[in-house]
Structures are given as structure tokens and as C-alpha cells.
Amino acid sequence: MGMSRDIQISARNVGVAIDGVTILEGVDLDIVAGEVLALVGPNGAGKSTLLGVLSGDEASTGSVDVAGRPLGEWRIADLARQRAVLAQDNQLSFPFTVLEVVEMGRSPWLRTEREADDDAAVLEAMRETAVTAFAPRQFPSLSGGERARVSLARVLAQRTSILMLDEPTAALDLKHQEDVLRVARDRARAGDAVVVVLHDLNLAAAYADRIALLERGRLRAVGAPADVLTAELISDVYQYPVEILNRASGDLLVIPIR
Amino acid sequence: MTTVNMDATTRADLVPRRTRSTGILIASLAVASIITALVSIGSGQLSVSPLEVLSILLRAIGIDTGIQPEHQNAEAAIWTIRLPRVVLSLVIGAALAVAGLLMQAIFGNPLAEPGVVGVSSGAALGACSAIVFGLNFFGEWTTAILAFSAGLVTTLIVYVTSRARGKTEVVTLILTGIAVNAFCGAGLAFLTFIGDTAAREQIVFWQLGSLNGSRWVQVAVVVPCVLIGIAASFTLVRRLDLLALGEKSARHLGVNVEALRIVAIVLVALLVGAAVSFAGIIAFVGLVVPHLMRMIIGPAHLPLLVTSTLGGALLLMLADLFARTAVQYADLPIGMLTSLVGGPFFFWLLRRTRKRSGGWA
Image (cartoon, rainbow over the protein chains, first blue to last red):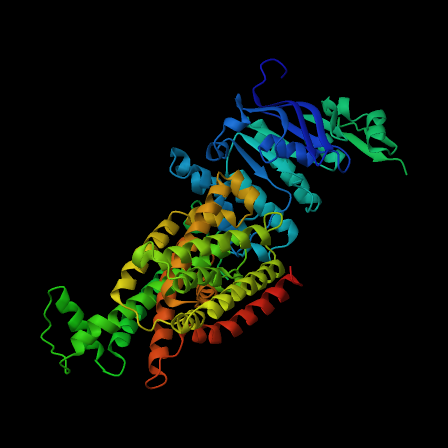
């Protein structure tokens, strides 16, 4: 990598202020095809807000280009074929079944030639997130973690070249956390651009190609895990002493000093 | 519980669609509606059998069945009095059920209903102003247009005030309804106070809800509005399904949520305005019908729209038949009947919603 990187989203000098309080300021970031970018940082650092700006949910100053076109020029329907977004809370007003919910992910492709992929996309997404067995169940009857996986299946079924996930692992147990991030990494290996907000630095270390570290609305560091996850930087940003372990396998482990 | 074929390669292999139960429901509702219509047209002081009714109706389109009505003036009574009333009850029932369905979808709350949240009384306030102030700048259409405008304003007010962070909580919705109903009630009281005796009588009729005195003139105003309203609703169904995911997720899937909301609110006002302008406040149809249908065939909006249209028509025809025939020589107010049944139903729904969410959220 590093030579001809296919930039899917390019944010320049992005800022967000709500009621005079600065939430984000001067953020420059590229979302690149073929890689997983993890957004990390302490609570209130602006991770979800940044994801909201990149997905077009939040208004911001500065500029955001998606596939080379300013975000504001995109039609809502066209944008839905470009990027899929997994929100943090996944509510549902009416008792649709799991299968119906996942199928909703295909609606941007209605009346396009990719409509033919509907069944395959839905079934594959359900397999990847291990929710096939829930297919006929009503979404509201599922547990929090199951709902999170079904929502992820809906987002995967959308089969867009940009995937944005806001804390997809928050409600999940250890196995499903690993499964979800493995799916995200597989999508990136297949050429998609994946942005994921993560709390767990060890998951970011294991699965991200690049990590963007936010601190009070500013981008403190962006780069490969080994460059961003240093004891000095993490201890400073999180205001808590940590040590970094380099395991023989090449993995990094962030361990708080207790 | 449906079994899941884990090796499915198509969606149909995984879980069969609910088309069969939907089909059966649509067919039963349609058949029940036709039978009820024939019975209802034949019922009243001058009794005509359903078969005779059918032959009279068929004759009008050039099919002669050879059956002659027993009464000389049966045909005239049916054409001038009974038929317009049954048609009006059918159309208004469909309008109210669809308006309820649309409101529930955009509020994201199964308890939203034109009567409960005050849209109906808002529209009634508009209609009553036309009577008391003797307004007739649009001729036959004046009452309907005022009912529509007032209904539109009320829907917008309820919508804007009862939502917080893209969702409407039950408590907020119902308290908003209380406030709107109180305000509109005061407006109606004022109109009753300043109106003359004839106007007062009409206002009382509005508040009770009645199909008494329905004629073809009114049918001609209501039917086009309701047909347009329901036909336009069909174009929204897929987006209403997606809206169940919440505004943000719907937008991520390509739905222009703002535009969808505005169109749905205008349609609600159109349907409720058309219904209220000639029949008064008939509450709870919009609550009961979509809810029952959802329980049978699930929440997908396309089948729900078809079945709610039929179910609303059937329910109001039955209510009207009962209102006309339950007490001899008396025409009970139909709004009173629907509230008599709908009130307890609403209460049951509230309790159930509360139990499920563990509070009033």
C-alpha cells in the first residue's frame, strides 16, 4: 500500500460546534478502499460525531468528498448505494421479522440491475453475522447483542463499497466481537473501505490497518497501529498510564497499569 | 415456530413469505364487505333482501336478473337514501383506517390515531367554522376544504410538539392529544355559543359523529379525496417500512425522511378532513383497524394498507348498520358507537404497551 490509494471519502478541516461548544475541529482524514480504519479516543472525543459527519448525518464546516464529489451534492438515494451505516442504537417501531429487517438493507438497489443479488446478499450477510437461525423471529423479541448482529447483517446486505460502523461490538460477547471485526476485515480485503468506531484498543490493534486517535475533537494521531498505540501517546490521551505489550505473533496489547 | 432451513440458497427456502395468510385475509375482508354492503343497503324501515338489492344494483349497469323487488318504491329508496349512506360509511371507514396507519408509521408509535391526538377535532373545528360563519366561498367544497386546512395545521402542530429525538413517546403523544383536544373543544364550545339554533344542532351532530342525511352530493366530494389519499399512500409503503428503523437508518437506506413526512402529513389531513367534513368525529377506527391487521399479517405496510382499507370500510359499514337498526325509529350517532368499542380497546392497548416497555416510554 501507500502508492495509489483509492480514496473513498476525504474530509478536510472538518469542524462541528453545537451551541457554541466545539465538538470537532480541524479534522483531516481519508477513508481508503481496502483498509479498515478504526476511530478511537476517550469518551466525548468526537468519534461518533466524526462518523456522523462522514456519513452525512451531521452538518459540519470544512469539506467532505465522497467518491470525489462533495457530500452536499449527493442525492440521498444515490448515497445509499455508496455507503452503508450501522448506527449505535438500533430501534424498530414495529415487530418486523429478522429476515424482513435484513431485507430492508437491499432497498437502495430496488429497480437497479443489482436487485438480482438480493437473495444472495441477504443470505450471505445473515450467515456472516450468524443470525440465519433467527430469520423468522420478531426483531423486538431478540436480546441486545442479537439485535446488534441483525442490524449489522442489514448493513452488510446493502453491499456498498463504503462501510461505516458505529461501535458494532458494544453489545457483543467475546466471540461475536471477534467475528464482527473479522467480517469487517474481510470486506476491506475484498476492496471495500471500512470505518469503525471502537472503544476497545486491543480490538483496534488486532483488526485495524490504520487507527485515527481523537482527543477532545481534534485528531491527535493517524497511522498504523504500531505508530499510534504507543504507551506515551495512549497514556497522555486517555489520562491513564498504560503499557504496550508486543506479543511474539506481532499483535499489540494495550494494558492499563493497575 | 417456523423452521429455518440453514442451507437455504434463496429467501423463499429460508422462510416462506406470509403471502398466503395475507391473501386469505384480503379475500375474507372483501367478501365480508360486499355481504355487509348488500345487507346494509337492504336494512331499515323498508326491508329489502340482499338478493333484491343485488338485482337492483346490477340493473343499473345493464344486467337484468329477473328478480323484481316486493316494494314499489324500494328502488327509489335504495338509490336516493340507502346507497349514498352505505357508500359514505365505506369510504369514510377506509379513510380513517388509512389515516391511522399513516400516522402510526410516521410517529413510529402504534397508538397514534387521528381522534386520540386531536386531528379529528381540529378538522371539526374548521368544518364548524364554515357553518357558524356561513362561509361558502368554495360552494359544496367549503366545509371539506376548511376541515382539510384545519386538520393539516393540527397534524403539523401535534407532530412538531410531540416528537423528541426522532421518536414520539406514548406519554408525550397522549398529553399532546389532550392539549389539542382541549383547545379544539374550547373552539367548538365558542362556536356553539355564538351560533344560532340550527348551527348549534349541526355542531352537536359533528361532535357525536353521524352519517345521517348522507346524499350523493357529499359522496361526490368525499370519494375523490379519499381515493386520491389512499392511492397516494400506496406510493409510500416501502419507505414507511424503512422508517420503522428510525429516521437516521431510513436516511442511510436512501429515504428522504423530511419529504416522506410532509407527504404523509398532508395525506392524513386530506383523509381526515374528507371524513370529518360530512360525518363528524368518528374516533378509534384508525387505531383499531390497523392494529388488528398488524396482529394478523405483521407490520409490512403494503399488505397492511390493503387490509386496513378493507377493514376500515367493513368496520364502519357494520357500525352504521348497527346505528341505524339497533333501536327502532332511531339513528344512533356512529361516533358514539366507535368510541364505545374503541375506548376500552385503546385502554387495553395502553396497558399492553406499558407492560411491554416496562413503563410509559
